[in-house]
Image (tube, rainbow, N blue to C red; front, side, top):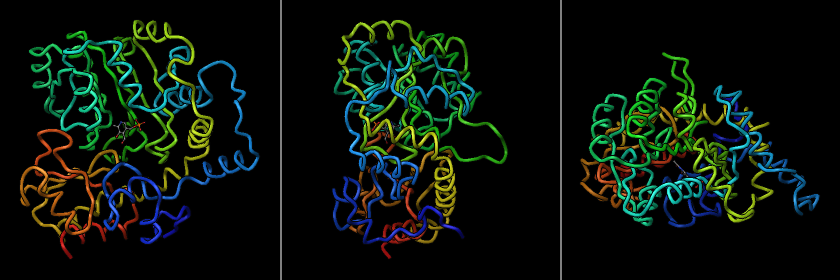
Length: 383
Ligand SMILES: Cc1ncc(COP(=O)(O)O)c(C=O)c1O
């Protein structure tokens, strides 16, 4: 099997010495927690950044009017990849996806306001809402749960919906029909939708249907006017430390509020991060396809690995993301499974971090080589 980008031949000793929180925060354990990949980055990115650094060309960039070149490329990419045409006048560079989400919450809602999201939920969303004193309205995940979503929204009257699309931690991929219905529900309740699409390049092919990722802002005219889309190259191309993301503000009032801030109020984008995103989105396609091949193999083989090493665990392969949401409640409720895996030398994310449904669950990061995944799961099983 060809391994053009070295995705299958990761060296365990090298991984353990990788700088960064994933491998350094819990020394001595196999790291399968925070959503960073173990893979070497795309050569297109390392070559572009190396050339820039070798030249010493790290002064003020000559980019012209905002947004940055990566922000401009975002517009083209949404169009060519998903058939959605964002308005370049509504594109903002931000430091990271969470900054975009928090700006929208801060400017569109007040302390005490109810805000909806699907739970289990990416924990920084839950933490943001708690820190910002907003009330959390929990929605169930799944295309078959839309009636429940509708009645919860009708009863709780949230002001805003944070859509994690595709969904972390469950790996649920919202299809067009589900999104259209969600948009109708949101329209009836006059919600604003903040759609975090950071995992949208990590959707697996489904042989039964050719549908690709569908940006929420593209599902209806109403959605186009009420959606704030936030995304980044950082998740699919493993660039989280660089800090660059992009926000598209379909919502006219938020756009007006944002433009009322003085220039530089939210800072200005980082040259290296923008260059990396441009390289990723221009020349990183082959690398991303190779990564998706390995991830697809891993998400499938995990069924078998769990069956062998951890019978009793319940897992359905995700439709998107490299995160496996595993019910290990046979080992105990709350954080008990995470604690057991820690003792066995593996660091995973504890389910309760993602909300109440996470009791007895763990989130396992599969963005590693098939060999490492097998080692991780064997260790989780105590062998
Ligand atoms: C759904 C989701 N949103 C946002 C982030 C973080 O993005 P950023 O570092 O740009 O804030 C992650 C990281 O895993 C994520 O899974």
